[in-house]
Length: 306
Image (cartoon, rainbow, N blue to C red):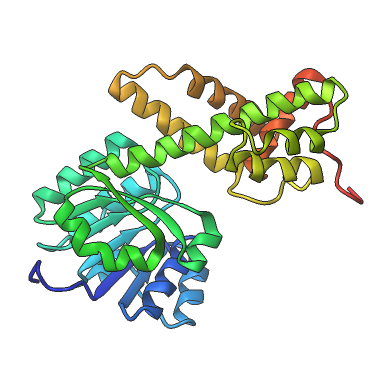
């Protein structure tokens, strides 16, 4: 396998709500795609749509140019990479691993080093944009690793994302993703808190929203969250439990780096409370339920017929 050759064969490990649509987009773009998932139903679904589905990781990654992992958490990533018959055991010289899930910083940098000892290269390339972005090929992709490897993988990344940004060396794509999550989650909590005060004052929440949305306090987070609060429909968006996981990874990175992050710590505690209150499967706008519980102030409109 010559490094200068264009990438043609890609394996996707993890064919769930994100990885499955990504594999299909690569197939439609002309790549030769193989895939593997622990869940038989996911393998069957992708096979019916033309992906060459393997029964094991070794079979999926044999002789491919690049291996994408899209896994739900750091624990799953470590098992897939370092477990029996895992990617490290199977990696061939010159193969590129692209870790597109959100993992811990320590794990990301350690695995990148191990991949290097096996004669491969690794990019950390976590994404933002959710399932809709994965289906539409409109993800935002934040990339860390060798710039040369990044350049070689651009045809893959540009197939999957509308925005592809090279951030820096190993782990820097993940750092950008954690920054994204920290900003979002702090914004969600601040929005819930501010509009709790407005509700307590007897203000019309929609009028307050219209008044502030074009000012400096306005944001995409506000435009995304307030309609959910005003409608009572908290079913849209990436589940709160996944944001909670990413917050934990941000705090783990802070500990590793020796970084003081009091707002992220408080945000994570509020997400802890929301998770304990059974809000994990709703959108992260459900963190507003914590404010309702703590203050007794009604914030989220009851859905029609609910």
